[in-house]
Image (cartoon, rainbow, N blue to C red; front, side, top):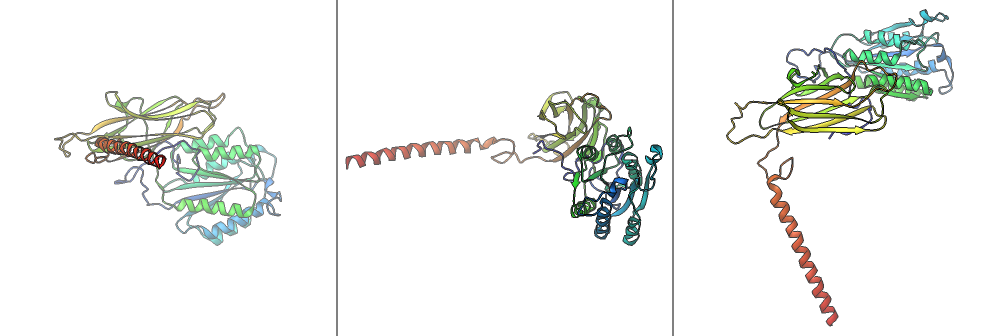
Length: 424
């Protein structure tokens, strides 16, 4: 059953790939991993001047990061292609324009040579600015190509110093490309502003944010994220919903992503044969500040506009994801030839009532994830059906009647025993 909950990254790779063309190899099923490419991870390390601070287990933040990196490199799974990119590592000056270009690929994304990667990390020294936005764009470019999992792990001890290029907007742009890339962020000894910025970056791509104050915590979390990249995942397929059912794309069973404007309706079509059951769920993410009081609905409608069933969810506080789901069994009729029976066109309508807070951009649309599953329907020949008791009502009636008679009998016996006791 779909419930409302706060997005916890990694648990569902929920909203990892957001819009635009992901092509499947011939013969692949929508939403299934192809397994042809190795997963890729790009570790993005802040090497700005503030990393000199000595407040992590008695050593500098830079020393803690190097120690964690060495342990992570030793534990990286063989199947993972890993790279390292830095920000603020090379320019020590005061020229903002130059400082905001200070990002470099320290170790290219590819098969890991642990000795070479450790040697590269050992050369790092806290230096300059904190160009998180520009570095994220470059880190995404490092991971281009292939159909496998892509993950950026950003480790920083401060907020971006290169506004107006907002790192949160950069993360949304990366998500909108639909390249299946997740950004996880780790904040070293965080303050409120940094926590808000790193959380926003992670949420925009379905990633996680973690605050870190000890070396062991940093090592464990980075290891966890690298290992997660090696786990098999279902990659959502980008699809463009339509403004009306007649023009909507026809979907098969699978996991799909789209974007939906504030208050917009998106339509999709699914073919359901007699004897089959359609199960569908949708999650819409509020990846930016929204006004309170909102909802998400998922409706199944015939191609002539008659509503079949709906699922909806509402909220009134700050949340990241709203979800709704529905189930529709298409019954078989007597005399139907299952091999010749025509499929029913079911139109799925996704709607939301989110509204943007003052000053918040409304584009790109909100990330949407749609799950479609068409399975064999429930066995309606049994006495108790999946969607109600069906012919099992007689059983319920018998149980109620038995309980009633037992109660009357027990009451009569109790009164008789009491009368006998008083007589004696």
